[in-house]
Length: 248
Image (cartoon, rainbow, N blue to C red; front, side, top):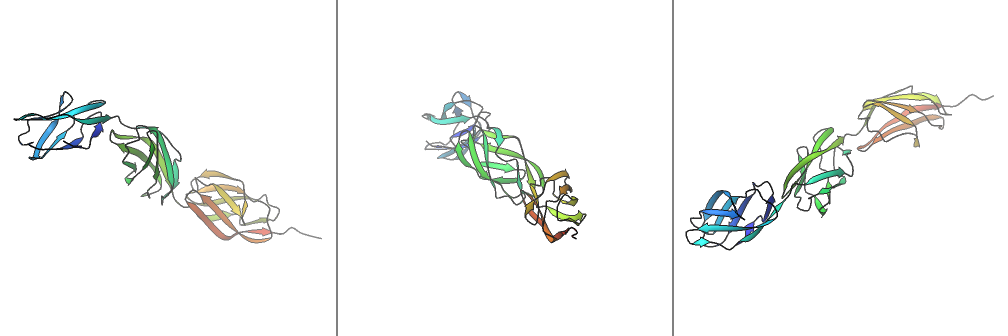
């Protein structure tokens, strides 16, 4: 007499289907010593019921006017606990793989990032990996893991959009470097690097739309300025001009 699924939450509430013979007029389904609810005769060979709360492994039995069946095992699983994400932010387009660590993850069937859901790869009871789905908009979303034991929330993941560059002020300075430049744009709060003609420049994030940058030394002429965050890069072609110093 198989039962599907054969595991569920310790809090109960799992809809199970029991298949066998001579199941007509079922009067009771028990999980161990506890009565199941919403017992429904689907056919002479099939009964559905909702599991009560419980712990560990219990025997499920079906009672009809003809007697009580042999027990089949059902396993209660605790709700998952998530302790950490290997990365708490990433591109709005998704596609990056992260690791979720915790306990009770061995029966994980889905991971939700806000309204978007992905199917995980279970590594062990303490770890799983998941490819982050695309987000609806930049910003934080809650992360939840669903297992046979239930769904657990509590972690946050931030979707990051590709940066844009609106202005550079000033747009020129000496080739020796050292010019303080303000870059404005969008999605700059998670900036990882700023380069002038491929050379990395020191920078500070003022806010999500402003960076304060100091130009590195460069070659006289117009150069590209590139701002990069985890979602991608924005390039201002010829955005800054290095000016040669005077010579005598």
